[in-house]
Length: 297
Length: 297
Image (cartoon, rainbow over all chains, first blue to last red; front, side, top):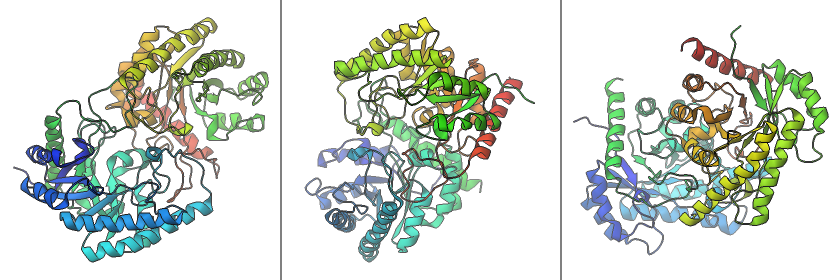
């Protein structure tokens, strides 16, 4: 069997949202599909018992990474002091949650200011306001980053596509922020779905982010199963090899099988059929791409 | 010099928005950059004098296609009767505008229901509401399509990405609608920017749309200049050749040069430097790809 250095996994939302103890059997299903790691949304208070969840994940033989859930009340980019402080406090709390779950990575659009999914439309931003927002994000990540460093947790700042963020859209934008934060516990998280929309050259962006990458999401251009679309996975795998990224790589295939005019593709939809076979095929595909990239270095 | 069968051009928004008589010199600039056709936003009343505009376009040696501007008050998908009727009346009026300008194509998200740019966030839609909306779009296009057929104008129904539409996201969605309208004057318009986000295989989607294609927009994955990103233009050109599409192909490079964290990439921004050289390079690149595809058939 070929071996990969990266733990490959899937996000809990692939199966259910909200994800509760009723879905713990999914940990075994993903393991059976070839996964090594689960990405959990950081549970909101009362959603999951952390001790029980940690045990269930370990029982299935998986490790765990966390995806932060920012909103307009947890928003480092906000000019509203309460929202800014809420953003810092939330990020600090995710470090404690990670420690309780045995996770060492918290990724996502940590900078806040969600757009389309918070009902916020793209609008022009003055140069002064752009600067204020980025400065605030840097200050907030500096503060929350101290908690992360203390607990051995790494934050991954994830660029999102233009419709989901007007703070950070590209690897270069994320590096600009992370370089200013200047804390080894605050790095960059990359997602090929967003990169497909915003980068000029995905592999080049991975190489330029290099050692700053702390987490990676492997998604097809249209969020279909990895291998079903047009992302050049061989090229992605070679770039991951070249930067010696050995951390987790997580899939979020949300395309579902309910195609047709009028379907809300942007909206999370629950699976309508069992997709474990497709997930296993995607994980095998990605592991092969990564293994061949290393073999042919 | 190599010859292409398609008229290649650029949208007026590349230079200015709103586009008025003060910008008529842009027709000469685009011609100099190698363009054969201009895509104009359908002028709102009073924005442009149609006779004068037609003369200015002809004077520069260009032809013209039109991009419809729908909004929530011109919305074939709407359950509100006034908005639905407003959508039909608007589409009928665009046919008259096309006739006055000597244009034979009106493209765009003719079905209405704009999302992110109308401040409408993705939300779940019931199956009944999905069906009602698509039925309404078909009925509206049947009605407005009669005016188009009478005037020798073709409508191009354009799928948009998931953040801009929850009515029509893929070539297959557009074909589903257009096949039901069943009027040769109502076809499909494709845009590689949206296809890059939603199709599994861009070339395959072009081939499956085949003779229904009435208009085409060639945009890089991130709206950079054609040739600067990762769209596989050789593959696109071969698919266009295979379906014998000989209509216009228009560029909309809106990436601009003001990169940096905090820039609103989704928002239209005016050019900050003269980009005529980059436009000329993109047009030459695309013409070469199309010509080589035909040479090597």
